[in-house]
Amino acid sequence: MGHTGTTIDDQLLAWLMQQRLFFVATAPLAQDGLVNVSPKGLDTFRVLDPRTVAYLDLTGSGIETVAHVKENGRIVLMFCALEGSPKIVRLHGHGEAIEPPHADFSNLLSQFPEQPGVRSIVRVALTRVADSCGFGVPLFEFQGERTTLGDWARKKGPQEVAAYQQAKNLKSLDGLPGLLDPVAEVRQ
Image 1 (cartoon, rainbow, N blue to C red):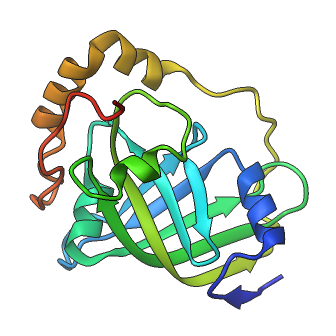
Image 2 (spheres, helix red, strand yellow):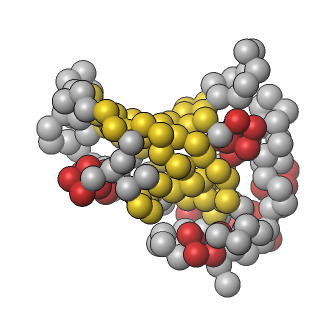
């Protein structure tokens, strides 16, 4: 344990794809700005190449990660083994929020299973890949994915999800710009 590098090898790739939960952390530049940590799941993570990863950013009540990434690009994704051998992996890098108008959006979106309520894809150019022991992480047994977020987005429909994004996702808690322009449909 305790390895540091800048790329994801095949062994780490296999381990990452087995994890069902990861955390994303970002912060604004302002000293009094709010640091954000968000849990992610629902098969929303992909390794694009040994130095690049991406995840689906699904509609939520805040837009902190996207706003922070747009402001300064700093981001870390942390995975920890909740089953099996103890291990923590942190993927540090420079993030970019890819929204539907972006030329890369459709191609990136095609690499994920269909999810209702997608508002962007966060792509991360890795600058540091590090693992550590994870001996203090408790063991948990996976019981299944929650369906609440997908059910909510399907029930609302694309137009109401776009209206929700318009109301809740244009600015971060610190007033930083969030989404450019919420769209009603991202998969054509």
